[in-house]
Image (cartoon, rainbow, N blue to C red; front, top):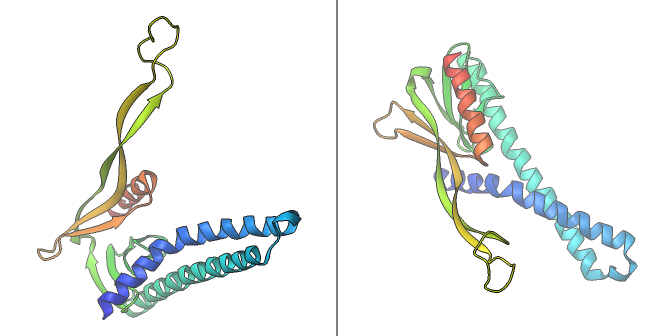
Length: 205
């Protein structure tokens, strides 16, 4: 049951940000139409605007509650274990399962904010870390660049296939035969590289 709750809250945290963003934009557009476009005013648009505001509010509220639960857990661990886990370095947060680090005592905690469970390890528990990603392909169409069309000065369009990186993940290899890999999805290449640099500073600083 705790596993299902953790998965459910993790999914909620994953989708809450885009849902809040989309519904926030939708509610803003619909409100502007209601205020400035008399021809667009209708009861249906009013209901849509109201629903968008409500969904945006509850998505933001869910994120706030998830974040509050995680921070409270870290504060309780610090008080109980007399360590100094840094609330600014919570890898995987706001997912309910995350790592948090204590640079001073060179300790880390693996936390689950749904169940309140945690495990504390020395920094030596982490063997290495790196960014991983998948690849996709897309078609690029150029207006010019191809061969000339006979008896004209026009060029044929060019079609090329290009690969790109996607689904960035930060991977931690740890000293655990049963569960040696922890993977944290990243929201793009920049956050993945930032966390790699941050871990370099945490473990080697």
